[in-house]
Image (tube, rainbow, N blue to C red):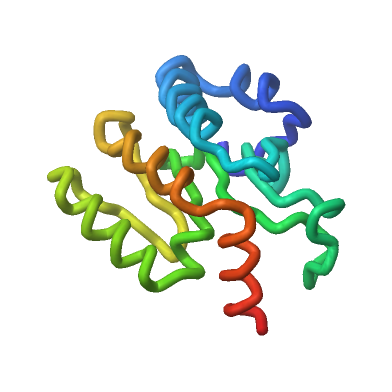
Length: 147
């Protein structure tokens, strides 16, 4: 699955094969346990999205909520998207150093961390990263990047 048409997280999870459903559900639980106040879980862009509601921050370039993080099952891998890491060079260095210290191989794009099996992902580090960036810090980083 590359992009889902599911309108709820439960529908999205139900579409997944058992092994991916279990992995995505475990990462989701860690994200939810560490999600800062003001960030909401929804389905957007065909994946589980964690975003700043438009009621909180309506001034976006595309009139869509700012994506804080996301979780998806792609065709050849699963991915956690950490946009706060992409928008903050110091946080990215911290994240890469912490990831390397786990001994696991990092497969990272600009904001996505790809994994094929749950044991390839340091789930605790994902939770720690999510908890590290509150709503105000995320919005401040957005303003620094977008001007």
